[in-house]
Amino acid sequence: MDTAVTVERPASTPVFTDARLRTAHRVFRGALIFNTALTAFWLFALLTHRTGGFFTNYEIGRDVLGRIAGGILFFYVIWGFVWYGIKSLLLKHFVGFTKEERRQAFSSRMREPFEVAALTSRYSERRIRIADMIGRRGRFITLAAAGFFYLYARVSVDPSPGFATLFLQDNLLDAVITSWVFLGFFYADGTLAAAFYGPQSRVMDGVLARANCLLITTLWTAFKFVMVPLGSRLAAVFPSNRFAAVFALIWGAYIIGDAMAEIGGALFGKQTLRVRGIGDVNRKSIGGTVSGFAGALALCLWVVISQGMPPAWIAVAVIIAAANTLIELFSPRGTDDFFMATGNALICLVFGMLLPS
Image (cartoon, rainbow, N blue to C red; front, side):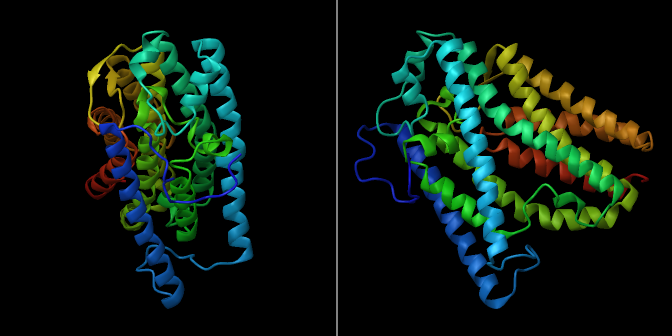
């Protein structure tokens, strides 16, 4: 089991040369530079008590460190082990992977050759995609959906100007420490590294699986900086009785649309649409695209109707669902989470300024 965290790549890694490794190293270096800058900003805030309005909590304390450690322990370790185990069982019994193939699937894949084509020649590609989907979406959607509906109910009862950022951690230190942990495990093998990266690292992404995950994590941290000023503007253009609806349109459409696109694509889609991005196999499907649009539209229409919003907001619901679908389809893989959430917030902001509330 891994017992230490380090951001240094072991001198013995990798033992083979591959153009994809250069991409993985570039993603790692970019994330390392970004988090180093983020750490410097946190240190500046700690020493000068100036944050530029981005974060209100940056002090170190026992309660803060305990909260961060508890969050990492539950979400990334305990919950990660649960879905690591589930995905491992699926790869064994549903797909047919051998013990050695499962070991490789949960490794960093940067110490030895890992070829997706060799696996899909022996096993069903659809079954591999389904196992990937269950590991990723099971780990994320269960907690995300519970958190979303809890916060939606909270904003409905007690709207506050910070409603748009309730899904984010408002403490810079959380982002700094979590990002360092992900960087530290990027090249690592072993059980603990597999718990952090295993459930969401697609087999179909091959050598670039962890690079895809690290890119998503890094962009999610960057999104916190984008959402803070956007959240302030949203609070300024909407009356408090619309906060819950706008919160749901931003976050709910993104969570449901993104999840349904992957679920529908894995279960029913034919992977014929080639896309750009970080991964060995970059293809999406019409079935997944339609599923994502249907899921986002259903959620948005439910929000508009249940909140008694004016008829013009039905058009907003359709536009957000369509925008989510197009962004998910055309964004380079690994970046769609960032652009979908940002796009939803911008659409709501524009229509909040144009339409009657």
